[in-house]
Image 1 (tube, rainbow, N blue to C red):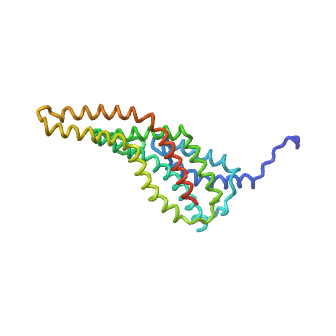
Image 2: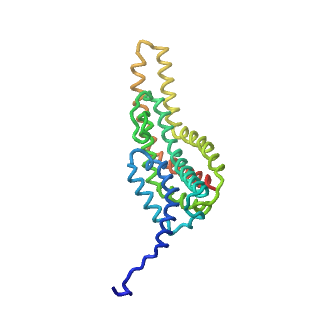
Image 3: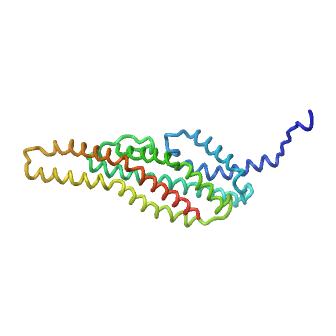
Length: 262
């Protein structure tokens, strides 16, 4: 073989790339397990594994090497646990951000009288109201439409400038960020549903007054169809105006996930 055309493979370089990819895959893989839409039961585990390895191999040349060498010792295990905790914190905060839409859907379903209409949620694997599932799907589509998945990767990428792979890191701030963000999530879910909830409250109060003044009209038989019809009309009016607050809320979620790693 002509020596000028021979391809030399340096084994040390190969193992260095594999080791760097391994450290990155710990953080990215854990993040994808808890990420919104991607980490749900809708996406098979093999696809998540392939996606995690592909992202890790792509980002390996762009990120600094790990500060810990892989070995069978306590230092390596603690460094791996920190990587898993950082990835889980970022993915869980993004997942918690989309739960605001589910909270809004459940509040609206109670006002419309659809709280009893529950079915198996493929995203969560449990029983949940139909309206909550609908709002979750809308928020998931908005998540991809506004490049929320790219923001998710960006947060993970920027986290390596603060906490490189294997570096010591205090997780107290990350653990405290989750309950603080949960309060904001509940407030955001209530704000999404507030216009429809107030309108449905007025409708229900009106039929309550009608039931007291004219019980012969059977307001119960009239009130439920009217509440459903009014609820669907309000949802049609609300849906075009829901993209802007959802986009703003996703930006807030990305900022909270980034600050949790600091």
